[in-house]
Length: 511
Image (cartoon, rainbow, N blue to C red; front, side, top):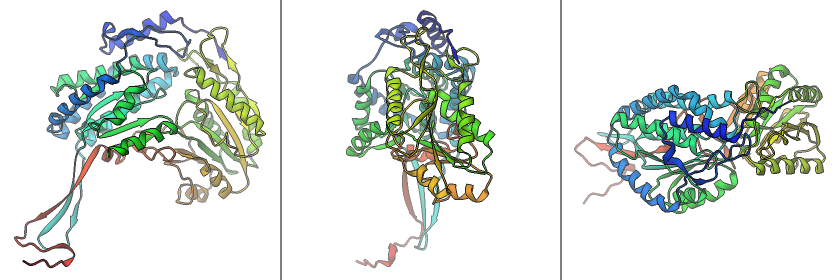
């Protein structure tokens, strides 16, 4: 069902500026000529100002100068800044969620959840600031000790995508700052107010702590800014979130100058539904993972691989559930599916549906555009389900929208082969009551993804675990676990306290 109560552009524009101002953004400083559309109604929210690539050199120079001071502050002191940032995020959670909904079209619950991710990573980073551990090793030489130490890396460039306009920046920034790095953020062109508001709150935390200027900077503009950061020798690490195609361009360019890259790229995520699966549980997990965020998460479930004994029943139940999904204004209470980000996303989904039909697929739910009379310039679609006879090329291609393919299997090894037979390797799941099936799926012979779940969907990763994937997903890891190591450099130290000079491997070089 659809909800047509869409606000006018002037209302959304006022709401957005008010929320940004509440976070500390001066509307006069961000006003400009650049068009700024909301996917809620496809209309301009009011012009904003963009920078261009010529500013990047100066920004990096300032970040390098700040780094030389920031790295001297003990890590717990840096953690105190992030603690204050988390408090400010908590205070302004509703303001930032409003901006996320207005600029990228997330429903209110998911927008609030994204800000909660920011708060959670601050909590994690504060604890981490007292746990940047190295190791001590046994030396083969008498009177010697081996140890490793970790040191700040330098300037970190963060390039984020529209679908998580602030959370992914915060994952990188909270960790990078406690590690002693400085950060330059190139946000999505779709969400400048989200970026300015988040940056203003962090600036406030930094200022209150007496931190050096320019520890954190944001540069709003087009793709040329990201390209300039990628190529800049003063940027030690580029953390980029986007498509696999983007990653193929970024990775080699950073490597060519011997920089480091952390890539979070595409996903083509599947759930295997076994004969023993709790179908009620599976149904809930699939619907959220496949239709949440209008299918615009890198962890969105795009494939269901169902055992032939349960496939028909599961498909029927999914079709019934999809028919009840409220599509419409993401800010309106009760809405579960908001808009696609723009017309290109709709065109890509329509093309994928057409190709799936050519490949023998049958659309059994959704797929049509809705609310065209109320919002001709916005792109709302009914989440679609397509049953497929085989895993054709279009199924192996990530389509960034609410498009779910259903395939069938006869034995578990066949299902795992289907799960793995895509270029991407981000997230995966299995629904089963069989312990042996669950263990096999998470073993080295099972899913080849970076995220491997049992009895939950493919979306909704927690902060404590490292986030990222393999193959065309890029291999990067962000957020929890030991992902902090990507933001630091390692030094191996040998300390000789013996007064002698024995050589390793028994080498004799007596002069």
